[in-house]
Amino acid sequence: YAMLRGADTTGVFQLESPGMRQLIQMLEPDRFEDLMALVALYRPGLLSLDQHVEYAARKHGRRQVTYPHPALEEVLRDTYGIIVYQEQVMQVAVRLAGYTMGQADTLRKVMGKKVRKDLIPHRKTFIEGAVGNGIDAKRAEEIFELIVPFADYGFNASHACAYAYIAYQTAYLKTHYPAQFMAANLTSEMGNTNRIVVLINECKAMGIRVLPPDVNASEYDFVVTPQGIRFGLGAIKNVGANAVESIVKARTEAGRFTSLYDFCERVDLGAVNRRMIESFIKAGAMDTLEGTRAQSMAVIDSAMENGTRVWKDRASGQSGL
Image (cartoon, rainbow, N blue to C red; front, top):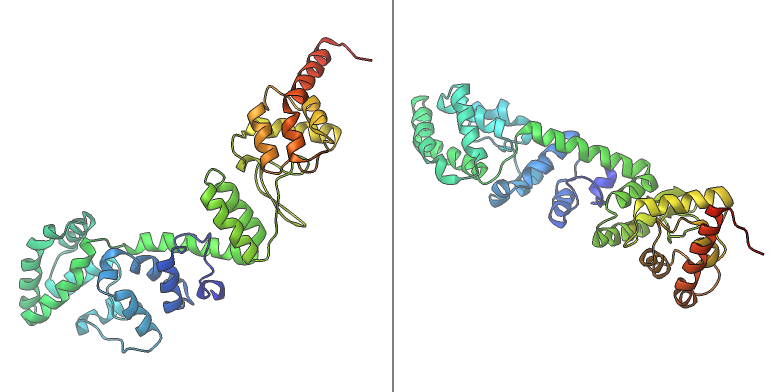
C-alpha cells in the first residue's frame, strides 16, 4: 500500500494511467476496499459527477459523510455515502422505490447497455415508488440523478473486486520481487517496442540494471541475473523462438561464441538467417564477439557461407585440413 500511495504503479494491473495515478494520490488507499473503489470510481459515469474527488475527501475527513436518505446508510456506509457499484443502485431502488429484486436487476441490465435514454421509463417508476414510500418527490428526483451516470459506465462490485485482487497481486509482486516482476512484464510485452521502452525506464527508476542482449548470455525471455535483468533475444526485431533455441543449444554444448565465424559454424543456419544476424549486430547482441559492429556487418555473407560449408561437411562426415 505504501508503494501504491506513491503512485509507483507502472506494471500494476488497472492502476497505471496518469489519471488513475492522480486518483491514487488523492485517495491514498490503505485497505483492499479502497482498491475496489479505485477501479470503480475511475469510470466515465462517476467521474462526470466528481464522485472520485468526493470519495477521497470523505475518506480522509475533509468532507462530512452524508447519505442521500437515512434509509441508505446501511447500503452506502462502506463507500462513505456514495453510490459506487451497480449492486448499490439495485439496493437503492429496492429500499427507496419499492422495486422487487427482479425489477432492480432489470434496472441493472438497462444500465449495462450504457444508453441513458433507456433509463427514462425507470425515472417515473422510481420516483412514484419513492413517493409512495413517503419520500419527497424532489428528493427522489435528486437520488435518481445519482443513478443516471451508471448508464454511461458503472462497475458491479464483483467485477471491481476481481480487478482489485489482480491489482493487489501485481502490486505485491512489484514490491517484494521487483526484478522478477519487471522481467516478467518485459517478456510479456516483447512485441511492443514502445512498451519495452517504458518498462526499461521503470527498471532504471527502480535501480534495476537492464543488461544488453548478448548471444553469449541471453535467453529468449528477459531473465533475472545477479547483475540485473538480461535483455531477452526474443525482443529483438526479426528474431524467432527457434533461432534462439538453436543459439542456446550451441552455447550450452560448446561454450561461448568467440567470433561471427564461430557463431555461424556452430549455430543451425536453417534456424538463424541473415536478417536475424543483422538484427543481433545492430542490437548489440554480438558486441562480446571479436570485432566491431561495422566489421561484423561487413563479413556476414562470408561467415554464413563458411558456416554453411562447415555444416554440410559435418553432415557428410568430411573434415578439412
